[in-house]
Image (tube, rainbow, N blue to C red; front, side, top):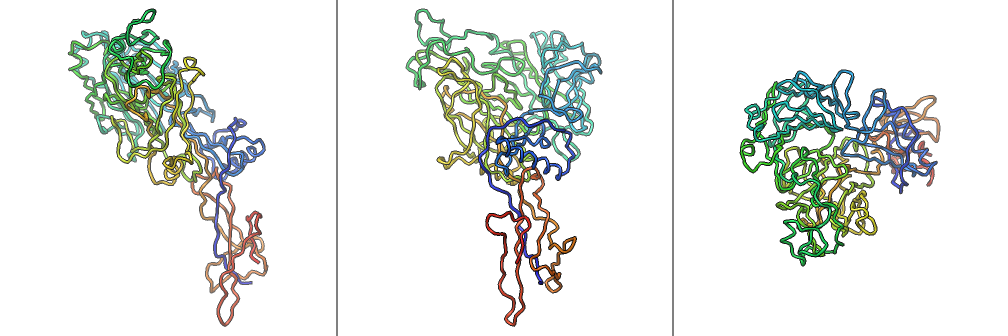
Length: 622
């Protein structure tokens, strides 16, 4: 029979529902350089185990510091959980550790976090030229201090170098992705020291070039111009709002009443019949007098304070920061005063923007979380519950995702998940998830506002615990498309993102009503993009017709291969697009045309395929 191979198609299989994930058996994780065949082999084993157990099984070779991959129990689809913060840290020898910024003293006398994705270390004291170094992929940025350093006192994730100048402490704080550097200026006399008028910090960059970014931010870029380390705009703030830390935990009445706490200044002006009274709270159910969420004055401005951006410049050997002289000379400045330049590395970016001008770039959430909505005073039941006793402000929270983990994947379903740590009251309010333009360390309020696309909204309240009945503990809030709401389109958006239609995916959390103080909530930094997917098929390689011990493939009709077998087997090597190797169950489909020369010419093409229900891995043409 003379025949020609006309076509070969490749297809992934559809998604089915999955069960809750379980831990997979330990495997060797030193597989960064593993071949696609090895990844496919492990994914096949994980998929078989998932089918047997009825539970998702981790594909351990696909682990990264920010993502986790599972085989779903349907035997055909996979699940990717991509986090904006590290979920594990790679260790020598292929082991993994839980991220932990707690500082320890190393044998080389440097001080470093126990487990961080960026190689951060601080000086153990002495010469200030090596105050801090941060390393990623063999590229190192070193920032010094212009003078000798005392041996630091360690406190958790912080190292405090006391009196680097008279009544000025230097506080270095490690994160799992970088570090924060804060000068704590304790008195007005210390602030008047000429050495604080301009800070010239020595820098060395190995394999990097320092350059100024937008809004007085800094970037350390590699030879290809890719940003390796980022430093947001340096800031300065005083202790306004932190003088009364540890205030009463009970709400203040709007009007004096017997056997109740004394009213706060703000509450004395309150009306018990305020319009913001969707649901009354029993007296005593508010847990704090200031619910802004800022508890450590060295981490950012307190209630009523605003950070002042600082002028910053960089050369090949020095980073120059100019503190704000106006705030230093202001007689209303509340000391200590804080001066803060910091540096971070991360696969993705995140920030919180405040309408009072503050920004919390690459913020840490933790047990307190960061706020979203209107921070003001919520009045209900004759009581005022203050988020702030100063000028009200609004906040929005942004998470940016990198497309690298989704390369080569066909997204079938997408969920965004983040933990709500606290809400203003037990009454649920609306929080929205909105796709926006990209963010950076220089982004300020109101953030990117063009072409907002609402992914979805949820009416929730969590984090007040036993103050509510029933109890409302902190919990993850999930956004997944509701088929009854046509505007919800997170899955379609993530599909476009995976297909390369956008370079970054930025999602914003905002209050549904930014004028309602009861809508104030605090969220963690643990945002996750959770997707079910299959690998995107690519054209098969080495197609041909089985002939003897090998295959043959002729593409010229005038010079066909002559095959004696009347029912030949057509073979090809299936494959996916790069990045989809571990997430595909593939099958090849072929078809052929039978040509019988006649005076009238060849007959029309005759497709051949396996019988319905069979597995067409080696289809025959009869």
